[in-house]
Image (cartoon, rainbow over all chains, first blue to last red; front, side, top):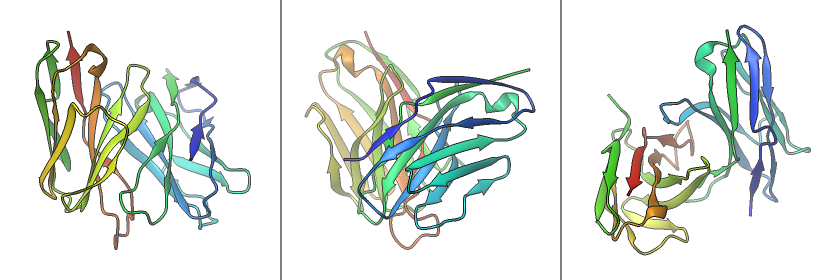
Length: 116
Length: 116
């Protein structure tokens, strides 16, 4: 079974600065997907970024980028130029590739607060 | 237009009652899910349907019964509600095969269920 670990329950950052959220996972699979989802106080689950394990290039989406280290099974999220609207719970998630009925295995979440 | 919509968003009900949460997706996806987020914000899959066929059924009390009348709808019916059923229930969908977004799961806004 896959497990996902987020070792930072809470983090804070000043507006306009950069912050990195950590995520590690454990799997015996070689082909899989990794995701970061954001959950603001409204509780909506919003996809932030997605990485396919077979791609060596790190995914980027505007101010969001990942550092994917497959051998180390690490998948950290970097948020640049942090904005107040980035305040949310961030979940790292794992999915096996190619299975019918894909299921996400989530980490425990990191509560990020962006301070003005 | 909301891609994955679920109703109601808020539901307060007494123990022992039966209630339903409805979900519809307009993304043309072939797979739909129910996830549960508990009071500690931990997210876990409950059910998954692919083209109206049940393909994932986690260890969930049989008081919970999903129904998929067509591939765009997945409803969740809960019988004999208990205090421990209080949670946020998320509907989600994905296109498992032949999609550029391959296996990415998109969530609805969540339904907050409180059992008193």
